[in-house]
Length: 92
Image (cartoon, rainbow, N blue to C red; front, side, top):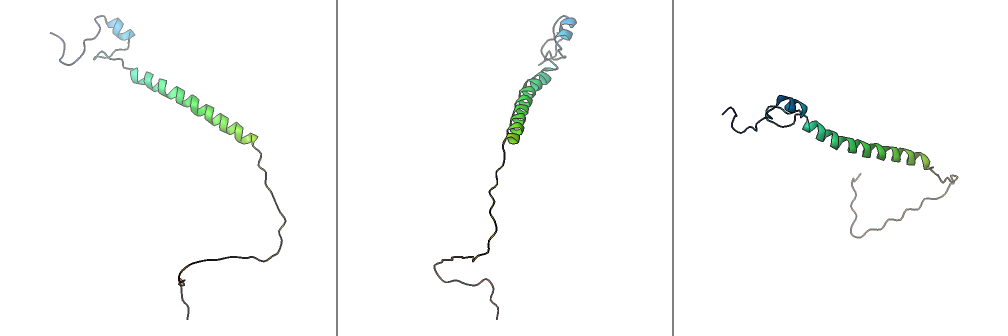
């Protein structure tokens, strides 16, 4: 018995193991890279599409400002309250 306990046997032919990129445990060495690529590429595409769309739509929107000439006049402020008012600071 030349197999270690808990380890999967590697393919019998070493050329097959090299072609499949198998390490000593029999699992693919580059499987995490493949999953990273499968996850990252769509995220980058979605992000790029969103960025392009927001960049082009912001340039197409024109801002309109309504202006009015300044005029002198009275300022009226109405204050209403219930209860007793107390000053924050009292000066004597």
